[in-house]
Image 1 (cartoon, rainbow, N blue to C red):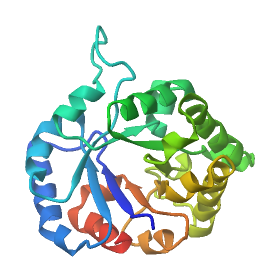
Image 2 (cartoon, one colour):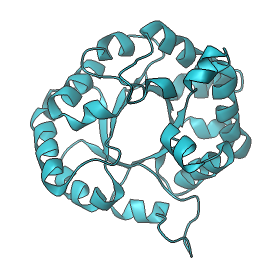
Image 3 (cartoon, rainbow, N blue to C red):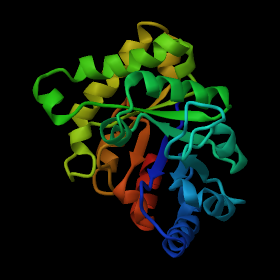
Image 4 (tube, helix red, strand yellow):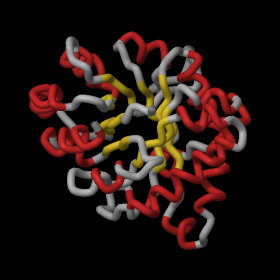
Length: 250
């Protein structure tokens, strides 16, 4: 049985003071989360501080981005080995904001996925379509293309110990959310695409929903058979709402 995962993507938000307050709130309630795995992904400059705050808790640490390169003259970049120094477990790769705002192609995302795995960490591999692509009816084509870039580079077996996050771009930060039926349809399609290559991998891989999940809609989304948790944006910045989602998943 797949263990649900709820990962908070804080994006470019927070300060030393606000992060302490947020983590204090989460830590106070995390004991009520019985069966779900919980992770937080702060901005890179706060990884050390958050790592220290999480010592002795069950909460995993994740990073929002990583370089596909291991070391060298890459000003401003962060290597997997550096993330390991701060006890990171997860790394988000291919988030739609990295793809659309910073020009990360499917090929770059696949290389980042490979680098994360090679370094012994777990990629949270984001895929999803824009509003225009959904309206054109090419959602399955888009997620297939994004998925195939990783499979072509790493093989389908690489997905067994990874996490996939389906994030309809039109539902990120907009307040819009895919209906549970819409989300389940795409999650089931993703799993079926993997199953066509390897049924065992398809059954094992966790597929999260990542489009404006919050405390109010989490239960209906996570109740779907192929939704194994959430990659949470805005709601992860509110300790009680984030805990509500975590408890729902657990």
